[in-house]
Image (tube, rainbow, N blue to C red):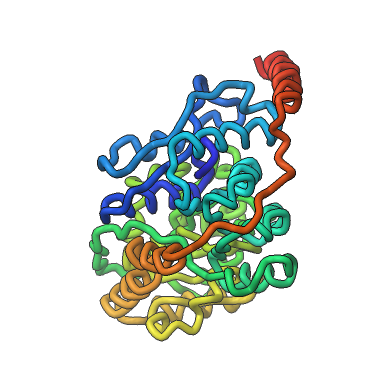
Length: 402
């Protein structure tokens, strides 16, 4: 059960996992809402329904059309829509796996005594833990996508029973294994993500590439994810460092446009201050691409993996010199060995089938909670207030944005 728009890798996983489970023969209920017109908060994004428009017969879409009353209304109003959809269309006892939307959690909590509630914690920000904290008594299972998230959840949400907490990374649909064997002497690097520093530390790329250049190493870096302005600003930084000719900015690309770049690359770089469990890391490894990234949530879990020594390097946040050393180590591995090791790590840890098997072991035999969430504001008076508030907010935004 999820919010209406694709917000990134984790919501993409929800669609992919639901489809894969149905293709495996499971009966799947995919619960979301369909915007009548694009939401102001969702412009330029794909709807979740657009990600599952082709599906097998046992994949049942449970949805209703919504408008500005949903987008600008209260959390209780949104929860009531999900509650009604579940009660009308989903058999009691069906486990409900949740996205990170608070309204979705409240709806599942309200029905937790009839439908086992399965929370998924995707990141280390408190917004994720707040849902778990509020619904600790209603959860039948709580899935963390990394070990650091599990530890933080136990520390910050002691109300959640330890025995219901599990670590399961999101899975990916494995791409065809078709890495290229390049004869040139370049280290072909790739970075995929937003060009900003607060989370992604993108400007560390300049320092890393400068040191590679100073050490006489031949390299080329592909950057995927820049906007026009951010790309121009960063290009100037590379130019000042005397390495602009070694960088290519690709802007935002669709998944099918990124795959050929991963196939051609030796190493994916991830310079982040924080992550939950980066899907881009999984996709790179699955493509036979080596990986060098910071010691943050998700990445650190595989630093000592027995299959990772030929394809996986980890360094301390901001330690550009060590990042360069890890790049050199991974680049020096024989190409075929690096590519095969990367694929083996992905197959053993991140394939969608492995993910579904792990979820299956958790969902099997889950029972509803003994009580439900009493705090959902879904009375007739609450819903009327929500409509009034939504109309006022909608008119204000319409005047400001047109």
